[in-house]
Amino acid sequence: MGWPGGWKRKLSVFAVCSLLLTPVTGAEPRTPAELASLVVQDCGSCHGMTLKGGLGPPLRPDNLEQLPAEAIAAIIREGVPDTAMPPWKPLLAPEEIDWISRQLKAGALVSPQ
Ligand code: HEC
Image 1 (tube, rainbow, N blue to C red):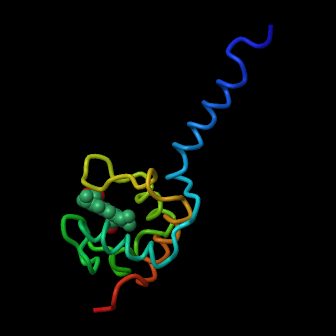
Image 2: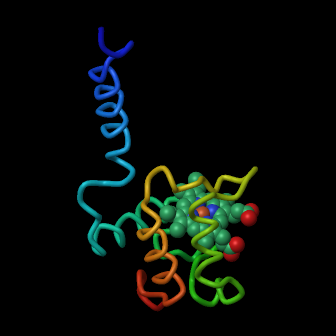
């Protein structure tokens, strides 16, 4: 007798889901240094290595004055539809995105010139 399908199959579905989720939730959160270099390299490829703009607009504190940190976080999470700005939520945890937003507001990731 027993259950149709059985618990073993449920267990293996669970195992596969946990595996797939690992890169998103991340076993180890990225350190601030890792996040800072991700911003310079990955965001910098469009926004400029010094965040002064390129394909994407500049991301210096002066440029972001109108945007509260939460709005910046929402843009990073979801991207801007129909533009080159991609959604980052598959790659970055919400707390990492919040951290990046606050650093951008503070101008803490790039030198001041
Ligand atoms: C493939 C190119 C590309 C990459 C990579 C990219 N962006 Fe963007 N980003 C853009 C473009 C283009 C826009 C302008 C969208 C528009 O027209 O509103 C934009 C807009 C933004 C805005 C809104 C700026 C404003 O003044 O409205 C923020 C904030 C932002 N990006 C942050 C980031 C961050 C942080 C990263 C890295 C995690 C990143 N972007 C990576 C292309 C990119």
